[in-house]
Amino acid sequence: MEKLSRGVSSEADVRNAMGQPDTVWEAESGERSLEYPKGPAGARTWIFYIGKDGKLSDYKQVLTEENFARIKVGMNKEEVRRMLGRPGSVMQFARKNEEVWDWRYVPSDASQAFFNVHMDIASGLVTGTSRSDIGGH
Image (cartoon, rainbow, N blue to C red; front, side):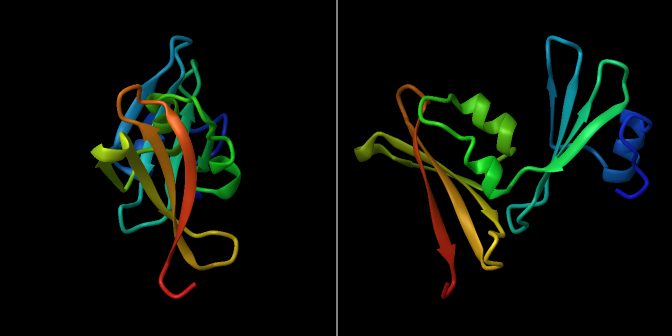
């Protein structure tokens, strides 16, 4: 990634450095987001933002506690997916009418954990979030 520069590198430069993205999101404005999950065993997902001019406008690792705090009750699945990338797993709990998406990440205390987004199966809307520590932490 050290070869990539905001405002200079093209989408082709990003693809040459990072490979084929898992998902490409197209905005009505002409901007694009390229998603690179480094999971499910990995704990990072990078999103590269390409401006209307075809140049890299920004990139960031999105599996952070700061970004997780932006997930709010009532958001829909697509909003969550665009913010956090592809989940490591999706599980449904029919009796609770709940679907849970999770992402492995490294929290600030340097352990490993899963960030979980709980959604209503029928509506697909977020009902809450939680964290599950991995291992003896």
